Length: 388
Ligand code: SF4
Ligand code: SF4
Image (cartoon, rainbow, N blue to C red; front, side, top):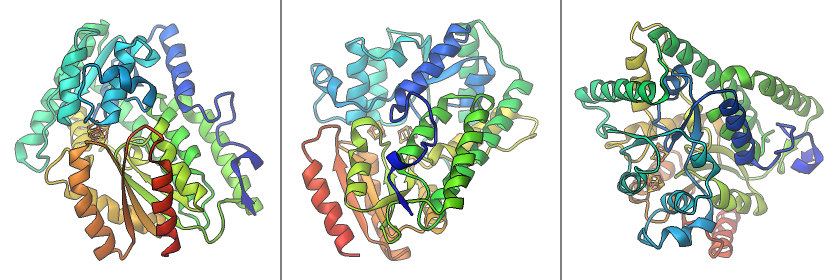
């Protein structure tokens, strides 16, 4: 039996269905009211285990709304990634509640645009910029990144007047691993044919799971698994049995850029794999436990994240192989945000890999947060599905 999300119980049944950011904001506000400091973060490389071990709650500051871009363009070049412009626009118009409640900001030297934007906002809040090694396979990279994480710990301890212990970081490593295993149990429902998960459900759960602790997520996971088991028992699935299964890879997709997911769905496809930092990527790997050096273990895990800011980024191809084997997509669609040079250039390798190694059709969509290209994207996605 096919379902539309309105026909069945949502995965997270609360007043925030369809409002991932508001749910996360309420969670962070509750924690802050209970006395926890808030560490704003901008990237998948932010070492959450250290932030949590210091007793802070993370808040994601990357923004996905078109409405603040005009304000940002008064300062930033128009030809810049919309994620950076949107994030900056929210700050200078003082309309980002996540930035507003952040007591400090953790930033990383990933792409040039973000790096230079951090300079422009550094006077608003205490900020720590982490020098991210971008040649992850060099032997110094791990030691340098571990040093940066130790420095971050010192910054957070001083700023928040709290402290983290190695035991506390080790406990957070274990908590992350439990969370990631549970998230992957959820993702397994999208590996089924047909999928039992809708993209927006994965997106909403991932949004919350990035900020919430494993302990706080337990009741939500229990409900989620109950709902998914019920769907499976009743034979309820999402889309149509023959819907093209889509793996979406590339830049983070959120807010206004989820138009791409919506178009895929309206064209009859089902997004089964969301290979980006706003999707499944943050939960795909585990951190080595009981090494005796938890900072080094955390450093090793984050350095393995296959972001296009790394060179060479061969791990992305390895991860893509695993994702394709697991979710069995019929097509690969890459989302590249305007002016994101690293993902845009790397797209050539991803295209060749999808086509030549996996014999999968590939489509690259370059877009921003406006709705001006919706019909053009729709035409291209429909043509792709027609060609299957
Ligand atoms: S895509 Fe890369 S730079 Fe962007 S949030 Fe993810 S890891 Fe960070
Ligand atoms: S999408 Fe690309 S350009 Fe934009 S912030 Fe992420 S890495 Fe930088």
